[in-house]
Each structure stands twice: as C-alpha cells, then as structure tokens.
Image (cartoon, rainbow, N blue to C red; front, side):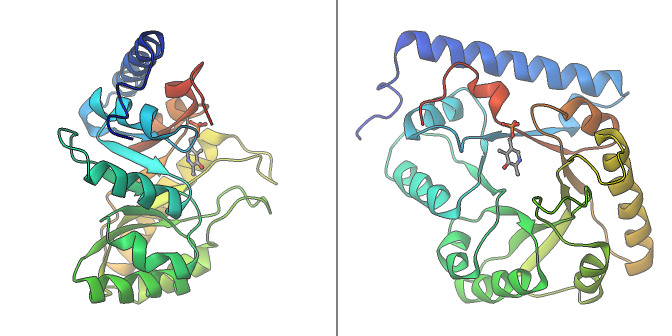
Length: 245
Ligand SMILES: *Cc1c(COP(=O)(O)O)cnc(C)c1O
C-alpha cells in the first residue's frame, strides 16, 4: 500500500469529512450545553471498524487520537503509518482488552492504554515499559454496569491498584468505563456520575490525581460529557455509511 489515502473514492472522502465535521459540532455543542469548554473534551476516533485507508483519511482530517480495540491491529496500523511520509503523528489509544503476551509489542507504539482490567496487566505493562525505557499512560477500567459481558475491574480491584502507586513504567492518568444495561437498572448518566464520584473519593483516599475520565461512545457521549468526560471514544458516528471491514 503506497498511499492509503488516495485509495479512497471521492465520495467516501466527502462522506468522512461530513461525518467528522458533524462529530466535532455535536461534541462541541454537548460541552457548551454542560457549561464546559469544548477544548477540554478529547475525541478519540475509534478506527476498529475500518482499514488503513479510512484510518489514514481520518488522521488527515485532523483526528490525531486514534483508538483500536485489538492490540495487533493497533501495531499493524502504527507500523504501516510509520513508513508513510507526510502523515501527522498519531497518539494511539488501546481501548479493548489486552492479553499480557501482547504488551511488549504494544508499548513500543507509546499508546494510551484505556483498558487496564487487572493488576496483572498493569504489572506487565509496567515491566515491559521499563524494558523499553518508556512510561506508558494508563487508565484503570472500571466495571460500572455489573454486566457479565463487560470488562473492567471491580471497585476493590481498582483500590488494590491505586494502593500500589506510584509504579515505575506507568502513569495512571484516570478512569475508563463503558455504560451498559446495569443490573440495578440505572441509566448511562447515573453510571457515569458514579465514576466521577468514585474518582473524587479515590483521589482523596489515595492522594493521587486521576484527571482523565474516558467515558462515552457514539450512543452516550452527551451524557458522558455532562458528567465530566475528558475523553470520548467515538467510532460508529464517524464511519456511518463507510464501514469497509
Ligand atoms: C467500539 C468501541 C467504542 C466506539 O463505539 P461506537 O459506539 O462505535 O462509537 C468505544 N469504546 C470501546 C471500548 C469500544 O470497544
């Protein structure tokens, strides 16, 4: 693949540009309606649905934070893009579950890892980061919905991680959560509010700072921003009508 962007048709490029503009406007509006500065909400463009071509096209539109679900796809795209001249630098975000045997190759790409879902994974990221002489920014993923299908740690597991801080090789920058159908029947907004409250409690209990809240996807970013999300992870809304893979 010599030039992955030019492989895209005019109509796909146009559609992507319109979708991205709409996402910027919607997220900005949600921030202002919550009395927040749109610049305080980072949009991670989730590119797990699409190939290198659409991923590069989004990057060229100015979305420099890209999220992938699978580590092996993140590093494949990162390695492809590194060989292409003229592309902006990407900050990669690992948003899906990471097996410990994938950590070594993943940390080479300096990702922000949103999906720290066990103390064991955190220890592996710390160990491989030290070997690679990098510090990896991480968010602790909290299971807020209580659903079996959703990943993330319990409150107790998160407290066990926070108690160990600081850990060389990693910087814990905040919390990540996905809203789901809660077993208690509460809404996304209530679940996000709970994350915000836990953040304050943990900051004071453990004397740490957890500035980033990675909450909200295409279906619930408005609620997430109202509850203080500093990062939203948006995929479907960006690639609406464009999904290739
Ligand atoms: C796929 C995914 C997203 C993006 O979801 P959309 O509904 O497509 O915006 C966000 N976060 C995680 C963890 C994901 O796996």
